[in-house]
Image (tube, rainbow, N blue to C red; front, side, top):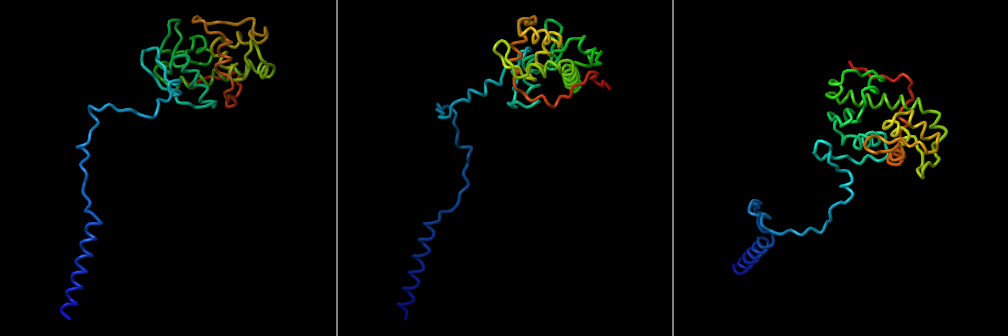
Length: 221
């Protein structure tokens, strides 16, 4: 009887030892002891080359980032702003054009903006001004949009967004001349950017959001 009890105790002790060995105690790892300082790290993931297409030095010397917004309306206005000023609301170029979208003073007067300092310091006002001006241009160019969208001029497919971007660059009157001369009258701004350039660069965006409005104005309140 005593021999049997001893055998059972030995078996239980053996099982306990095996369990202890199989499940080691959990210890807290001190991550501060681990560092990559001084090591040469070789990464297998390459840099995303496409990401650099959306990074550009702005005119004040800082790099800005333009998120990829596809062909949406927001993508249209942000891409246009990026081309105009690098997205800088306070910039004034060497020809006196103002803000994120580089408005001329006379254009601003047409849509109800007269206080230039207030305009430069108010991003919301600048965004409203862009919408109002684009709506006004769309009304002025409505017949040309119906007539020319889908055609090719100077090898560039004419789209509504291309027309509106070119109107922002050169004014709707110059865009009318360009379209009706089938590209012979190709206005260029002071930096050499042409209507044809903007027609191509801003082709195919969704500008259906903009409602043509002959009397589009900005509330400056």
